[in-house]
Image (spheres, rainbow, N blue to C red):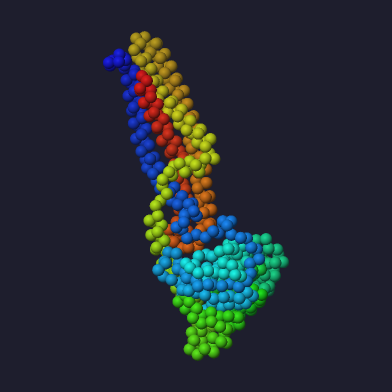
Length: 528
């Protein structure tokens, strides 16, 4: 067979081209699903990169917790001033929680915040801890805006005791030591004594080494609260924040814990959120909040002297409840628990319902899918030698597989010999080369898979580490969103990170091998 350039094609040449063409089509039919995996991996990578890039996104409400652009001040002290604070939860900006709120907590004094559920008391604590940033206004410590202080150092000067203390399934010693990692035994014992917990701890069989059980199930509510107070006091905080610390306790436990709190108030700037107003009668200053603003302020005596004041009505109502409590203490405990649950429930919608706007904002934000593959390669640059080895194996594998077509033609050509022995000799030689070439392809493919598997695993590990580190930098509002629940975060770290591996793992190697086979097949076909 010939054409106008006088190049003659024999049956062997045609067989080579047809074999390579058929082999390339077969390989491409197999790698079709792999391209789908690459597309899915691209989407997963964009999702993970969106999390990694969020710290540099100006549209994300995030504070500079870990950045070194704030002054490190180890001795933080002074008055705390809320100056005309307005705040709405980030996802529900149309529902104001605090409205032009202003108050001062004097240094070394106890300041109480009281009011009905949902009036913004706990939000003040969250803002002071910088879990959230105010929409407008300033929080000032000793005449300096709170944003001037390093957040880590600020929080190290704050002790917090909440309504529901969180204890870990470890010993009492370890739970208290969480307040100060390098605390000595003497410091832990002193903190327990200040919290009125040392005596009951010493009565336990293993004393400070007693395991509290999961969430402190082995201890009573009062005992857990005192251990939580000891954990807050062990670091000797300058500021003490108490968020309804005694509201869930019965009368006996409340009295014991309140005695410990009274000792803890001494020489500390304390902000108390009170459910039971009898616990804050000795406060230096009381602010009554309603609908996110201060409506009354003064001492207990001055507020009680104002006829018809909200504070006076709250105190009288609780006095009536206390009388009923004395008549039936069991009913009192149940009622207090129900009121606490109602308080928690009424505050929760501010977080859960306010997530809608941020979800819409997140969905409208364009996914960072451009140049994802190049960015993944850049992230996987420490493994470039491994990837290079894998690519070389792919090229050699592609070349080796095209040689099968040439060996096939040699075997076919063996049948042109008339002598049986001659045909047998050529067939045996071709079969031997088939065997050697097959072994070579197996070795090349083995190292190809190993190289890309290592590179893909390292990439997955790198992505998970970076994504988890970015999760630790997020503010509390980030985790209020449904798409950032614990289950969604675990999926993002496990499934999405594993899916990204397809863009630099074994499937990428198979695609490279197919491309190499097609390229060299076309090249050999043109050269024949």
